[in-house]
Length: 77
Image (cartoon, rainbow, N blue to C red; front, side, top):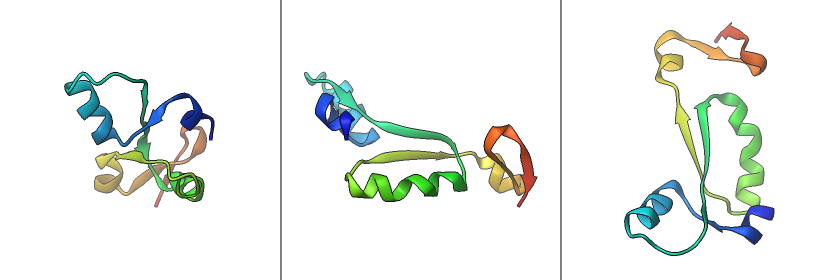
């Protein structure tokens, strides 16, 4: 994967530690905002390349039972 050739790919936890400790290097962390079920489609690729990722789940999806579809359309679960 191209990112591993250009950066040190780390988890978000490791990336934050590198910042706090002022480590030298170029670090890369992958995050998914407003995570929903569509993120599952990328999991096989992340596992194949042993690529750590952080998923932020929008609590409003849990509270309301409404999830976003692609293109910002909304649909009931």
